[in-house]
Image (cartoon, one colour):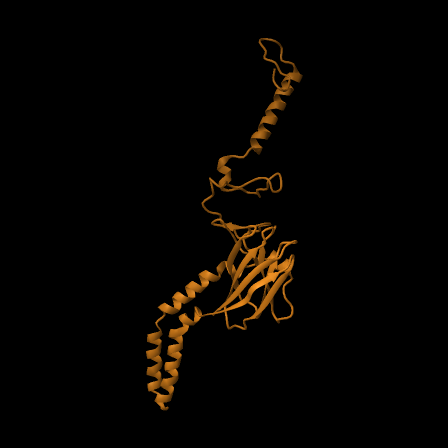
Length: 276
């Protein structure tokens, strides 16, 4: 029996209602055939393609991707990734520490490889054609040339100083110091050596807060939310030391050495190194 209720017949009479069911079945078959999607139609679709549910269906697969996507516009509600890395959008935070070392290395390499000698000779050639006191101008050009040659060394120049020596930080307390850069330095290197109490339960945190004017600094919670902190490893009665690099991209930065232990004090030695 078919889904319309028809049965196979031999030589019996075909009644009108049975024939009508046959016609209805043929009409339904044509309707479904007309509505079905043919593979050949995919090359020239005359309509939009809209999934039946929001944020459920996928186009492609991590192991079977489309080779190209050509379109005029693209609107993404969440994130976009290229080669496994998230594309930075407007107002996304950018952490200078993530790119600082690579950028400094490339700048130093570019300076070392630049043809400062050729530039120097061209300057001297121009000066030689001027009706001025050559000896004085040449001396100034020599100073500029030497300054260019010294630039890589100046970039690596460091000024170190011990800030605290055997300083006791009581439980749940902190000590701090502030550095003013004013474009003189590019980074601050902070080294902290901590000796824990034999009964201590927590370690030491290095946290840095930025300020544009030396008075208004980042709040500690916001600094930590931005990832501007590092924790020393911890073990009861042991000594741990850690060095961190703090990029200087505001005129002032305050460094806090925080005792995370709520019951016992800790003894610290702290050094700061300013790098041009």
